[in-house]
Length: 172
Image 1 (cartoon, rainbow, N blue to C red):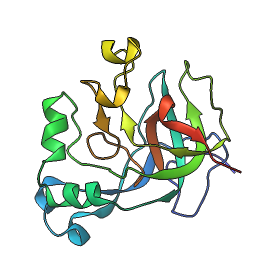
Image 2 (tube, rainbow, N blue to C red):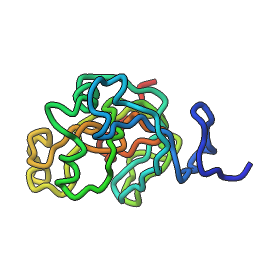
Image 3 (cartoon, rainbow, N blue to C red):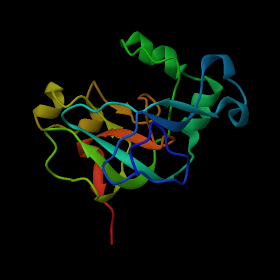
């Protein structure tokens, strides 16, 4: 079977095949409010990954207060907050808890490989942050963000984009 542009939910592409589009639960600013109405399934572009990023085919996710807040648009409009940082997307594809399969890795990733079963933690920071590079606690770094709340393409996507340090082997 040849590559497809989009795979239905429950339909798995060949290992390592990254489709152009994916399903995701998203919030848009005109839907802020009751989370059950704010979060809607859409088809969006599958994100590209950087040299230290990993693309995870999501098998399981969770719901937490970050997702409720993102849907409400309060206390932070996460879309406007990211746009202030130069990110252009007019939607939020959140989710801060994931388990899945590594589907693609950036050129500088060496600790996981395509096909690994993994979990993803929600701590996100700039890899070149001087605080982090000096050996200090990255969760206190000026660049720290909550993955899937303050970043896009979280675990409510078929393919979540995370930094390689967020990826941990799933316990057997």
